[in-house]
Length: 329
Image (cartoon, rainbow, N blue to C red):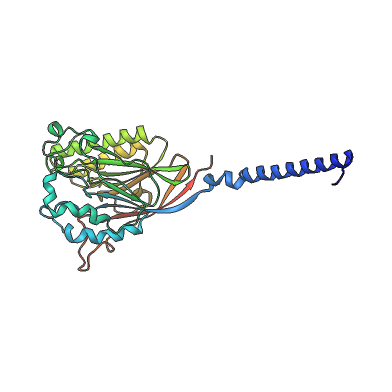
């Protein structure tokens, strides 16, 4: 057995304690984030693509296009976009419609998509605050809104319009808008909205459409204040202020008022797209630590056609490519 003198024992213990302290400090240094790691969220950036598409998912029996044939063809084409906002993709309907092939359209649209995050089926009128007996006695289908995303998002919140016009059968559906808070990077979120506005040109339609955008603006101001926002979809607004058509000028006024109230920017205006009157639109704003910059705006006319050259919907899908980056305070 080795015998230690008090001095040697003291030196040995002191050395071991010093080494332990160095080791502990090393561990602490490993746990402490570096300057680069601490500012990782500030340095986060990337590009993403969004698509807004009214897929014309009405029953074949009342459709002016061919959803039975075309919806399955749309499905794989959606995989080229990071976030897809759909309209007329009906995933709720009255049981009487189960006997129609229409009941298979939603499953066919999503059969070949590979987005890991997808909105769930519409929960029904009661869940979104609609009293069918008093508000929608002729209700047949849901809101037709959906989202497919390569980024995680929280609850898909569906909000129906408070009123509907009578000129284009809008009261048969729960049309409105929906929002999800999409996480582009840890701590960096953008509120993404999809919408389908009231259609038709009767006085009740015009009034309902204008009221809808007032309702949407109020919701954005309350729920997305200070946040980055991307909104896309079928606005049913022909926004050419130079048109001789009184309805077009009224549509332009509704859109301009909505843009001013929400402080959004029409992507078409931001990129001087040259075709501002189209009813399918995207608008945006930066905020919540994220700068958004649209890089490209395009209707994907040629890609979304069948082998005979026919469009896959009565709407052209609108694609926008974005650059996003964390904001440095």
